[in-house]
Every structure is written in C-alpha cells, then in structure tokens.
Image 1: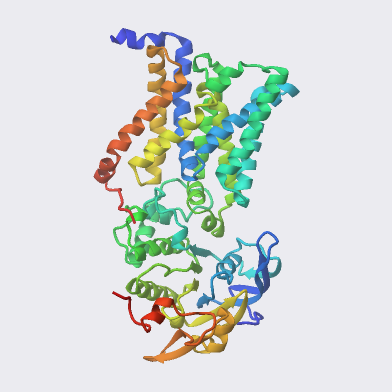
Image 2: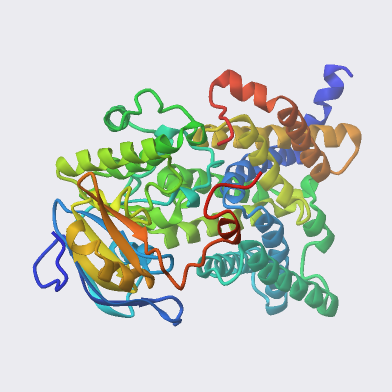
Length: 274
Length: 282
C-alpha cells in the first residue's frame, strides 16, 4: 500500500524529496511516498511531471536537493527502461542482454551452465522460450519489453521499476504485458511503473499515484482517478465515466485549453472529407 | 613470387619486431575499438592520438620521460573527455574535438618554439614501424596483456555500461569507474601503438576492424573476437605487404582492414543470415 505521509516503514521511503537538474527549476517538490513489499504502483502525470525522475530518485541515480530516499539495506532493484532509449542496433542477443545484468563482482565473460539454465527459465516464464539466440531487434514490441523485464528478474530483483512499459504497444500486447506484471506481482514481486495510459493501465492497478512535481493523490484508482485530482494533476478538466464496471477517464467536453480541430468544426465532428 | 622471396623479410630482426608489434597492435586496437565504436566515440582514437602528441611535447620541455609524460597526458585528456560526456552539456564528438585538438595545438606550438624533444616528430605523426625498438615490443605486449585481463575481468560490466549506462548504474555497477577504466585502456592503447601506426592512422585501426566485425555478427562476444582477429590479420598482412610493395606500413595495414570492410559490406548480410543471427529492421 502506498502511504502519503511516509511515516510507516517500507521497502522504499521517499520523504520530503526535492530534486532538480543542475540547479535549475525543481522537477520534484516535497514528494512523500512509501513503497511496501508486494505493491503494484502506477505513477501517472503529464509530460514533465517528474515521473521518470521519481523512479531515478528511488533507484538512487539522481541525488536529492533536499529530503531523503531510504531503501531497505541490501534491497535488490531492477529497472526496465523506456524502449525508446534502447539502441536496437547494439550487437546483443537476447541471452547476452539478460546475462549482462549479473555484472557485479568477479565473473567470467561467458555464462556458466547454471546461469544459462536460469536465463532459459526466466525467458520461459515470460513466454520467450527458445529466443535466447535472437538479436533484440528481431523481437516484437511485447517481446522487446519482456527481454528487459527478464534482465531485471535475472538479477533477483525484489523491486522492479518500469518506465512507460506499454509505450508504443498495441492494445493486445499492452494487455499481455499488464497481465504478466500482475502475475509477477502475485508471485511477490514489488512493481513500480510510470505510465501515460490512464484507462489501459492505471485504472487496472491496485494503487495509483498522481504526480505533477508533487504527489497530488495516491490510493486505489476509484479514490484517485476522480475529476478533482485529475484536474489538479493535468491542469485540465477531465471527466470520469463508468463503463462495464470500469472507470474511464475522458477529456471534459468544454475545455478552454483544448480547442477542437478546424476540420472537425467544418465537418460537424465527423470523419475526414472526401 | 617464390616462397624464398615471401619469407626473405623474416631474416631481418627489425622486420620480425615490426611484424610482432603490428600484429599485436592490430588485435589490441580491434578489441578496444569495439567499445569505442559502440559508444559512438569513433573520433576519440583520432583525437587522443593527437592529444598525446601535446603531452609528448610538454614532457620534453619539462624534462620528464617522454612516454611517461605523454601517457599521463593522454590519460588525463581521456578522463576529461569522459567527464564532459558524462555531464552531457555537449555531445561526445564536440567534447573530443575541443579537448584533444587544443592539446594537439599546444604540442605543435611547443615543438615549433622549442624543437622536437626526442624522437622524430614525423615518426610520431605518421608512424615508423620499422624503427621499433625492443622496448616498444615490450610496451605493446604489456598493454595488450593488461587490456585482455581487464576485458576478461570486467567483460559484463563493460558491456552493461556500454549498452545501457543508466540501468547499469541503477543495478549497482560503478559506471564512472568503468568509464574511467576504459579511457585509461584507450589512452594506453593509443600511446603504445602510436609509433607503429602514427597519429594519423590510429583512428582507422581502432574503428575499421570493429565496424567490419559489427557487420558480420549481431552478438557482442563474437564481435569482440572477430574484431581482434581482423585487426591482427590486418597488421600481419599489412606489414608483409608494406615490405614487398615498398610502401609505408601504416597505410598498408589500414588498407588491408579496408579490404575486409569492402568484403563485409558486400557479403556481410549473407554471412549473418547463414549464422542465424541477422535480424529484421524493427
């Protein structure tokens, strides 16, 4: 469970965190957040709201200006980066990509027999049986996402952070990734992800954090994905509809910040003109 | 050409020394070049070799051992480039361009003002493989051995940091240390091979074998081995060609590796399809 006051213990406790880059304007301001064992948390917010920075701060790769990030000593963490940041022409096979993660300490360049077996097990678990020798560019979008998930799992991570894990994926693949994350979480893995997808991802998660430099709201989707919190998070009015027992976030019909396209006006909001 | 004619240069010690150094230099540059190419720092070999020329001039001026002075200068320059790239105010190519060319300009100015401090400056600029001494042989053997040990011990950390620095750092790899280690290895490689290939041709020796290997495989481990092998063959064949064609060794070594490039460009796709590692454009 995610706790705004961050007074309880947790795997990761973010306390009054403020971060900026190179002395510039703060990207995060007074953020409080607690990640506990077994959490499956989605961080949502507009572009530039500090979602990725919050992940980096929890990972320890960004230093705070003030406040603290306390991690349970010895906590093993993994990061699944945005697929857009990957060099898909880099010469690594799937097995090499997964294996490189176990890099600390003295290790031989080649994988031991037990490591190869572990990689096969992880790939099998993620539905990628027999793809170890493929180049990472040869995989489908969902498989590419799974390779980096496999890499994080191969380090025996207790917490895995995913930065926009469903970015660029089609609906079917997005569902597959979401269900996979749910299964991993059910097996005890703590998962924190960022997403822009309020309806496809965030609404399905147990816990959602709305972020816009500060935490605007945190809790179950039915508590957080409400018009007041969403408007404060995105700076624009949004409605929440009920559809098939699910919450669906839509733009407010009258929004001074969002003007209709001229083509839509001319054709009465219909399709493209002949 | 008869066997006797082919083997004649092996009667000369200077040729045997040169051949050994050129072959090891080729392999060394081939291995280190993989990291250089994959980090999009192809220009750094060119820049560092020029930069070390500045260190050579300064060392001569203040009376320090030339190799030691040039080596320290090269390491400091490489670390400066690495530090600037990590901070990312400018791209790696720009950082290399600013730091190393300034160093080279300083070297040129000092040589013009006070003269060349030791070895012929032309030999350093253009290479003089037939003038290598026994100490040159030992230097390159030592650098090659240390490099192989470092690549062996830090293989996964080097690969992880080269492929995905941010995630490597997040999972506990000391990426700053790994970057610094690579820069030290790179500057030692440039220093050790400068006499053989010359300042002007080191960049090609670093880049071409790695690029050829990349065109032949999609596996990093295979690329590393292939690149070292192509570099070594280029050094060996290039040195022999140099003797028989009566052309300077640096150009023949680089032209040999360029021939590999042409062949890989023409047949690389077919080779990779056959080996089952070629991919489709995503």
